[in-house]
Length: 295
Image (cartoon, rainbow, N blue to C red; front, side):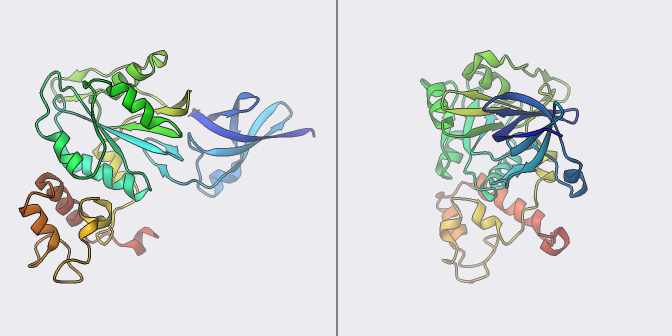
């Protein structure tokens, strides 16, 4: 049985049980070996893999260790996440947005923020909330916004995330007109967009790569690896510098006397919106056991 090994391969798309792998010799349609199903590992777009040719068919034989991965969108080895927030249609849901930023930071990615639809409704403080919290923030309608985003994307794999209808596909089409992604129309009845992106697919551009993905939503953040109450303070960049400066060593930063974080909120050095999200996410995390999650 004649076999050949092709190295340095990345999955750029998976659909219907087939995975399209980009190699130095071109793109190959592959299927994973059955062993991955037996050990409950599913190949993801962004995975670096080994493939083997067997009688003209290509099989994924190895999936290299991931530096990170997301359940939805299903993608691995992400370098940059751009969280897209619209000022209107739909308006920002800060708890969901802040849960996304926390999940990204837990996975080793400090996300960047893109604000859209400021031509329909002026920024009502969104820019300041996230800039004050230590994130890079770009108004998509600002001068040179697209050039700035392209510069930030270079050097790795970028993903755009955000609730449906915020304008992810519109932004991507403007950045990479050859992608011609389908854009979502807003459902007036529900006040949210309809999903139009059907499968994760990675595209190369000069200096990096970008994934077209189904977007994050509230349900999607729930499906990710749990956030535990004792780690959440480390996942808010504006809160983490104050850890250990409170009166009590075990301060939760929610109600304690002498809390350094609460003092920063009172002095407006920490956004009230972000602090509320911190408290909501921490309360939600109470009772989630690492042991029960096998984490």
